[in-house]
Length: 456
Image 1 (cartoon, rainbow, N blue to C red):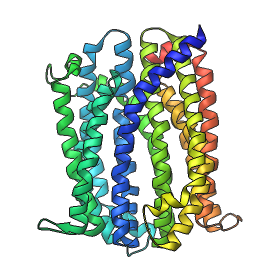
Image 2 (image 1 turned 45 degrees about the vertical axis):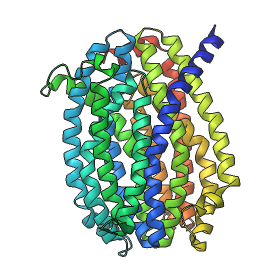
Image 3 (image 1 turned 90 degrees about the vertical axis):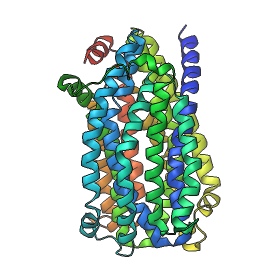
Image 4 (image 1 turned 30 degrees about the vertical axis):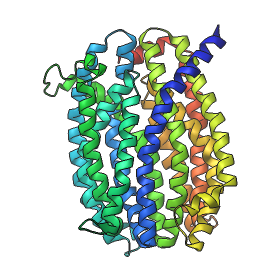
């Protein structure tokens, strides 16, 4: 019986995660487009875009994490037969997005001060600031898009987000080319032009998703049924659930961003090598991230309908799939690393360093896959507080001090430069993978605890 349920959940996870993976790959593909085009201009432009992304994406991840509570909440409502109640959840989530996005826009406006404080290479600062001056105006639209996407995901319909993301990527390529290199009467702006193109695409994604929700089966959610002013009680429940999600995502994203800023002291070539290796590994990371999101949906749905043993099988299936695919990722990084790096740049020094970093990326890939999937599974149970603590401890209490020590030769450690930071990431991700997996096995065997989490 359990084997049959396991196989059934594997099929459901694949059905849900394939569109999610395509969506995530298309979204990360926009970053690849930026890195590729900026890298063809100069190493300084690539470094400027990299540093700009190191500020924008953690803020966006933190803000979107606040509303990611929509997915497990809607999935549990759907499992309980209360689909019509999900529209109100999203209306309240949009108020959270409005506040979080506004604060994010203000924070991104202080980029120049922050870069000066971090002592990054001054050649990259003007490019990065110009890039962010455009990017930040896409923050509010993209958060609105995410809120509506999470509604569709929670109702087990992941196809619309995939189609929108692929369309956005196809539009992003010519737009970035125009604003980076110039054409059709538009002056080329180098790496800074990537920010203009991305902000335009984000606004269009939100507009199209509004149309999807208005004219599809998602209308059954009641999102457009009425206007809702902020409801403090509902917002509080969403924030209590979503804040740990946002902080956990922020903790992981920010550790990579802060590492990028520290590496900025080593020069634009070091930043460019690091960014290329990070882009390649980030592409592969979209697979476990998608499995984790699909697991949130399946676990949440089964918890909502009272099938706690089936929810456990969904989690086990997700972990097994993630680990198996992670092993394939290791082989890809080891045997094709220089070919992958060559897609970004033709500078021999950068290719050599980035290729070496991908060997370290291959080592941390299985850990990264497992921790991303495990945290998604726990989110389906509405278990977000403890995973947040685990993430903060793994990345900031272990990886960050270890990275500074190995990277700069502090605390009596050998000075390993770029390699030192990546070795620290391996250790931090490894700790997170083990502890988050143990948390899942512990929680999934305690129905009474699951019921309390579901009740809020």
